[in-house]
Image (tube, rainbow, N blue to C red; front, side, top):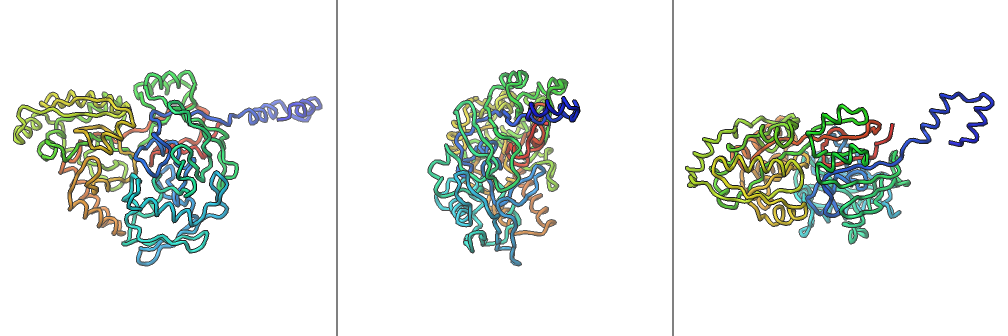
Length: 497
């Protein structure tokens, strides 16, 4: 705003006071934002780690894939502006957008797509969701803006799979430093990471698509719920996504400075169980565990009522969800009887290793008390996120843990015998193979019903609740996602009112 010029116009009666105020409002609108979240990423490569915190910062903001999730969970064009699918459903020809560049100024083309998909599906791939790419038989560069992907068998979920954060497109020349200096194609560029504190992004002026409305973004990491409450109340942060202290939400709702968005997630929160570690290799023990748990008491005590009970690893908002909570209804007497049948009438001791999120730490204390009531002594260890990934997820060194699986439509992880809860059921594995090859909606629904019933009946894990997603933000912040169809804090359309 040129205030000297505005003053001259006002002097000669050529501009109204209201118009001046409106113009000044635009000039003074904030162009930066501080967004807080509880977990800090262990590193910044979404293609080589299971930590959802990486996607929470980088998905869509810095890195993009051929397709991408919208705020409603829909699958939309990303770096691919369109695609053709062969009649047999095995060949996808992607047409890439023109003029896309990485943040270092280099062109993004079909060679980068081939590199990214081949790297993800390679034998030595460190991709946490390698199964998304296992069906790919070949990736061919047809020309700089055309890529042909051939599958070994039809896969009705292929475009969905390509929208995951694990499937983003990266350049070979930036891989060496990707964990500390991520270079993508998104509307924001990585600027700085002060470990233990924050990650800064800045607007990508050369973005191929609709430019971001914000110039600067800071992701601030605040793990302690009390500190989270204090930071929001003091307006030290502009938004807190996945706010970790749900007991404080009514106070924010009553304060006109703030808005509270409570959405749904893809986060199945489970008491993950090591199926190969005795005594959890005995289905009766796992069933006893399930009946020892009072889900509603956990939701009330740990989440202050926010959360939807689940009886299998499937999101209740999915049209194919089957309510199987009755399979593991709270029944401590049945739990004791099952333990006696399994040879553990006097109970046993196990480990309960908890990552930092408050749902895990608070829920863990409640579950430990519930298990103690039936004779199971769960020794709690509170781990930092990197420790949890090392000991539990990669090392499989645990009896029990609590974690929310926030990846979308991820029931297929139960078909991976080497996954951290080590469930090995060939029948279920075949079910997932059949599902991947089936395109008929009714037949897919039937297969998904069987899949949910199978893992519920095998009591693979203790199914607790679907994680609610509360966000507390300044009342003037617009464009935040309410729901979390994938673990992401997409700021590409966020602006100040």
